[in-house]
Length: 142
Ligand SMILES: [Zn+2]
Image 1 (tube, rainbow, N blue to C red):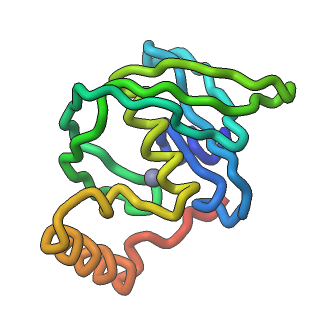
Image 2 (image 1 turned 180 degrees about the vertical axis):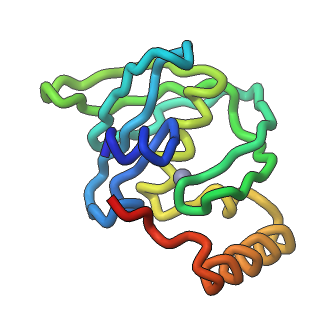
Image 3 (image 1 turned 90 degrees about the vertical axis):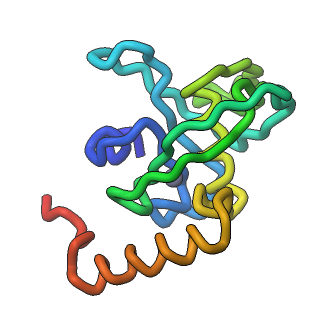
């Protein structure tokens, strides 16, 4: 999953996006672009969200090339199990907070387009379906 995330390229990926029916998400934690510091979150949940919110353009590996401005809490506290089986509680801010919320949404069957208006969502889905029909999003051959 970590490899798939970097290949995409993306900063987060949830298991259901790659056909794995488990509550697992990976995300990049490095602040510098040339660093890689991925974490694996097993069974992640959001314990707390800040009242303060941020609006930022957000994309998704399930909708390549499409971005929407989405408002989310700017900080969250998450709890998850890491690969060593340890329970980790972590407060995330800004981009990392956004990424964690986006990936945990995936695990709950929610997509980033569920955060925008019905009208905008309809337009985006229509456009994306057209692109799919035109063969624009065929998986890359290895
Ligand atoms: Zn996504």
